[in-house]
Length: 204
DNA sequence: GGAAGGATGCACT
DNA sequence: GTGCATCCTTCCA
Image (cartoon, rainbow, N blue to C red; front, top):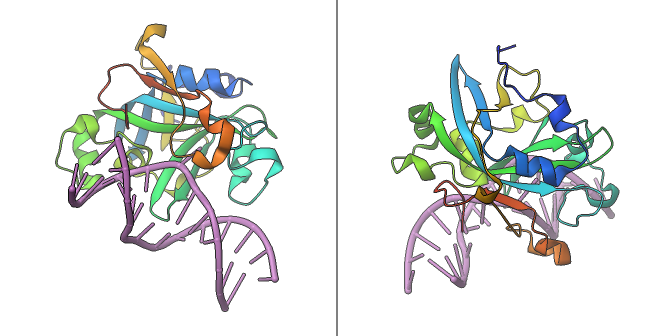
C-alpha cells in the first residue's frame, strides 16, 4: 500500500449519513496512480445518492442488478459505470454492506500530473476546467470500468486523501442535483455540493 | 437475440 | 442557455 497518513479509511466511508460524507469530501484529494506516476486533484463537486429513499439512485428500492451490486457493498469501494455509452462516472460507495448509498464525484481541480491528465483527455485548454464534469474527470484520471469495485482503502491505484485543505462551511454550496429529471420530486433534493467560486465545477 | 435507457458533453445560437 | 448526438451495458424475452 502507498504510505499515506492522510488516506481516508473505512471509518470515514462507512458512516450512515451519505449526505454528510458528500459534503465532507469537498476539498479532499483524489489520487490515481498509473504506471508509477501519481495524479492528484482536489474534489470540488459531489452529489449524494441514497438507495433507500431516492428515486435518482440506480439502486432505489431494492433494484438489485449486476450493475448496482457494487453500491450495496460496505463503504470505501469505487463504483464506476458507463453512462450514455460514452462516459464513465466515478462514485464512492458509502455506508454499511446492504445499504446502496454512494457519492458521485462530479468535478476535481487538477493539482499534480496535469500534463498526464491533458494527455489522457487530449485536451489543450485551461487545466482548471479540464476535469470539471463527471465524464471529464474520469477521462482525465483514466478511470474506467476496470476500477469498479476498487477498494479505496487498500488500493494502490486509486484512493482519497485528506489534503489538509481547510474548507469553511461558507465555502460549500448546496444545490439540486443535475441530469436526473426522471427522479420526479427527488430531483429537487439539495444533495449536490460544490466549492463556492471555484472554476472547476461543472456548472453554476 | 434484441430493445431501451442513460447521474453527459459539446456545438451552436 | 439550449438542443441533440451517441453507443455500450443491462435487462428481458
